Length: 302
Image (cartoon, rainbow, N blue to C red):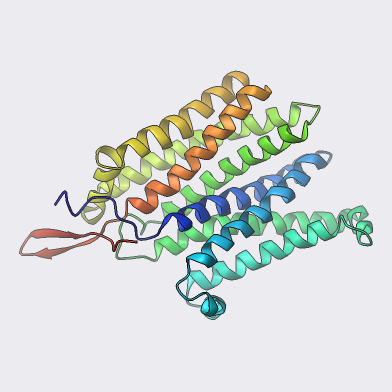
């Protein structure tokens, strides 16, 4: 049994990195759009969201494209939006990247006049934020449709991806603002305070996610791998300590200070990557029940 539960991947590292980049890019766009609605004077935060949002998702899509066995057939991904989440996700990604391109284009001559229209900017911001959030959350629904892997087949997974994406998006914005040398730390302080609450929410979601999966016989093997098995170090150190505890304490104690925020952001981004790694790598297919004896089917190797 232990041999069957050793780490094997349904998806490879390119998919894990894609999930991370798409979550960070979409999350930063959603946070930037919400920040614009609440603080329209904070133009620098909106600009940072545009600068990191669509490019990160585009980079993730490049990894996704190279992971395909038949890249020439990738156009078929959008052929069944009424049936498949992978088709809906492809459409969402395309629209999001196009919105980012339009935003970039509005800053370039001769289209700079568009940025002077408050209604145009408001509509573009709202659409950019909505499709950023959809970019983050659709992967959770895509995983939820994988009925053969109970660890993924839960409605709480889209929520976990969304909250984790928002958190990594905030960290990406903080690093971008610090890199730009924003003179006022008020925006960074507001972002860090908001993210502290997001991290608490994320910790609760992870707890209920694992607790709920432990109650499901078919998913219990995945939870054992994560909590005390071969993935326990990645979970307790990578996700819990580095991704949640350290950033939370730094944001609570030194929110707004550059050096602690750089460390908190780097740790939070590492934790976001580990969240995807643990979720993807923890996959164990549903067991066969033969006369009361459960036989777990390990996922195929990469």
